[in-house]
Image (cartoon, rainbow, N blue to C red; front, side, top):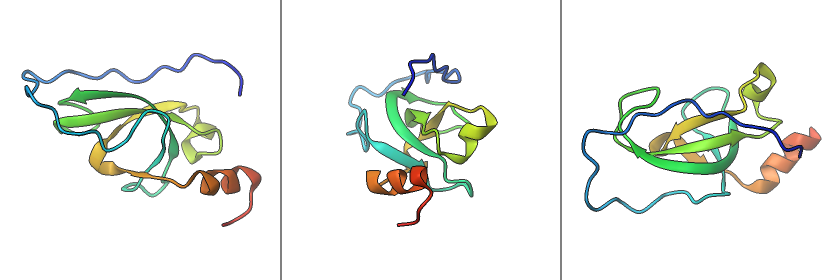
Length: 105
């Protein structure tokens, strides 16, 4: 993969951050996909922030996702985005390899 600069859309911190944060559902480097949208874009977790804002108002963890080059929105020029924890799910890395090669699993 070529080195390139990825710009993640801005995020706003909540007015109050809880003193004790919940355990993370996903870790840096894990492959995830959006389970709640028809395109089911997918990619790798590259960052995480506790925030109060995203595409919808939701307090909690938001994950910065670098989209995989075979993810549907990547072809539209979207290389990274935020995903709210409840909207994401883990993806089997073999499934992504299958999509890259154009075969079904």
